Length: 304
Image 1 (tube, rainbow, N blue to C red):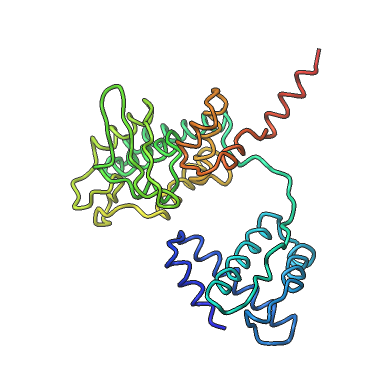
Image 2 (cartoon, one colour; image 1 turned 90 degrees about the vertical axis):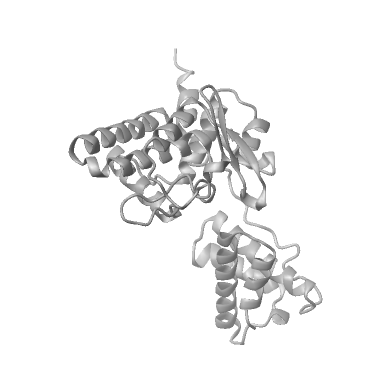
């Protein structure tokens, strides 16, 4: 069985690159387990509901995977079998009716107020130091600072922020916004920019080098002025995280922080979902889930 056909199907269905890679890898892992367990070559027509249930048990007890990881792998298998059925390779889908692993909803990781202050301070110190000691590098540092602040105040995904073009911006003294042309699921949305986000963009545009690229965020030092890659953004975040004493700082943590800040200020879930580009309010409700700080404050109210 050539699973490359399944991967091509996912690409033709316009699934995201991460989904294509993840589902393809999960399908291949299932095929490997199937052959090792059943001592037979993997074939779609040979897969039974018992195989999928046994694989779920294997992931739980032998590999001790998290519920979210197991459910993702089951979703990949379900997609594989649904494709096999629709393409006439199997008569019925053996993944139908397979239950997911129940999990307790947990709040996503975001930065609390002190951590946001630490990040802001690390950015400001970095700008001051580079302007004083490394003036040739200062433009790069200005770009990095503006980009991170932009992420923090817009909640854009990593893939979305690297694709912002100059023509996608609307800026004035008192308002502004950015058009996300190709969000998740190929959906467009317009995200208003608050004062901090507008200022971050203006500070960067004031020093942005001339470039043939129309990307907002471009390379500066000897890299041709092309649009930044996601990996470049992740590297600058890792540097700031180290300076601020933060663990696991990623673009998605900044996205979660943006959403949590809105929740804390009483913004309704419908508006937050629209800003984040969520298709379902159920996705947005994770930001209402209490984190450790919320629970600690709740318990402290019992005192006195």
